[in-house]
Each structure stands twice: as C-alpha cells, then as structure tokens.
Length: 283
Image (cartoon, rainbow, N blue to C red; front, side):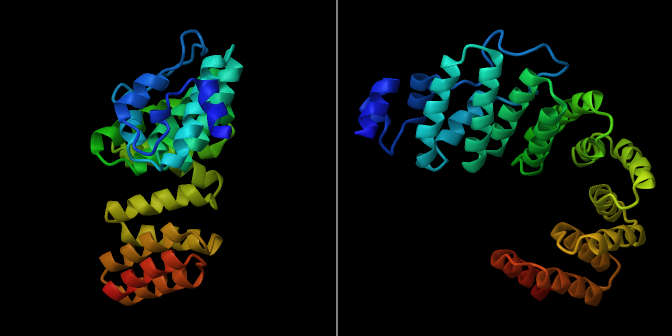
C-alpha cells in the first residue's frame, strides 16, 4: 500500500522501482538536479570546480550504490522541485549530503554540501563543505579529480576564513589543500608554522607538518612532531602509521613495530587491528 502511494505521489512508472534500474532512465525520468535551480543561490565568490561533472558522477553512482538509497534520492528530488525559496532548497541539499554520504558517494555528498554553503553564505557551512571536499579529494580515484576538488575546497575555505578569521581549523584545511593537492607545499607550511607557534598543541597542524616532514626526508623533525601528536591523543591512528614510516626510513624497524603495536593496543575496531597486524608482520 505504501509503495502504491509513493508511486502515485511521484508519478513513477512501476518498472523504475524494481532493482534493475537503468542509469540513463533514472537520470532522465526523475530529472536529478546536478546544478542549483536558477536564482536559488546568493552571489558568492566561488563556483563548482570546472573539472567536476556532477551529472556524470550521479549517473555513474546510481548504478553502483545500494538500491535501498534510490527511493530516498527520488523523494529528495521531488522535495527540491517543490521548494519555493533558497532556504527550503538549502534544507533539501543538507538531506542530500547525508544520503549520498551514507551511500558512499563522497564527491557528490561534498558537492551538495558546497551547494548549501553557496546558499547560506555562513562560515560554518563553508567549513563543513571544505572538510567534505578535502575528504573527497583524499579518496579520489584519479589525479585530475583530486586536483579539481583541491581547487574547489581551497576556494570554499577562503570564504570560510573571510567570514570567520578565528577558526584555525579552516587554515589547517587550507594548508592541506595546498600540500596534498600538490599545488604549493611551501605556502601550506607557511600557513601551519604560525599556527603551531601560537598553539603548540594543535593536533591537526602538527600532524600535517609531521607527515610532510617524512615526505621531504626530514625524519627527525617528523618523529618529534608525530610523537607529540600521539602523546596528546593516544587514538590518533594515522599519526602512529606515519610515525612508523619515519622510523622505517631511518632504518629503525624495531621502533616502527613498537609504534604500530602501541597503536593496535589503543584500538577497539577489530578490522583496523587486523590491518595493523598485517603491517607488523610485513616488518
């Protein structure tokens, strides 16, 4: 009964509700939004990166995600079409962020988060979108997509900093865009060094500086920073792993194994423990 009501409400043909949904069919029939409706967003200093084809990403994702998410996506598209003003559209975009994130489509989720920020023009929404775009960048499957996401996240974070100069996390994330996006590593370092001078215990800033000290061959500096991070947060798994890499580079496999064992001891996640055990055995 509920399914029949849903079909009547959205005027969806029955064959589109079955498991084997055609990608092109769902895009055309439901008219999935890949760009904000005209006039729905305020004029702000950035746009979606030119290298990101959201329509193509959605088309590909529809064929890959768990089919249980499709009804939610369809309903949200219906809500978006029915939205009468920018604030209503922003609320729908927020729901889209959550659904696509749950479905594992990190780039699409991040792009909708950026759509929210473009509407609200609020520092917290730009910060959130910047974080989402960085995560998508770090998990991008090819370098061109990673570069496009790096550029977009940088612009988003620029606006966040314009609106709130007190949030150091935005500055750290901007440095990550520069350093992990490989556009200007030294400029990223120049952003981070004043932050750790002002706040010597800033976890993320110290971690990023330590990580790139390993990349640049400054292993002793890396070890000092990463050990500091671990002393401040015993559960910072990534810091343990990078620290072990620094020890390996210095030829100290014993210390690398001790570091990974310490990390494993502080973990509750069984899968993560198993992965660490593999790394230990390889050493």
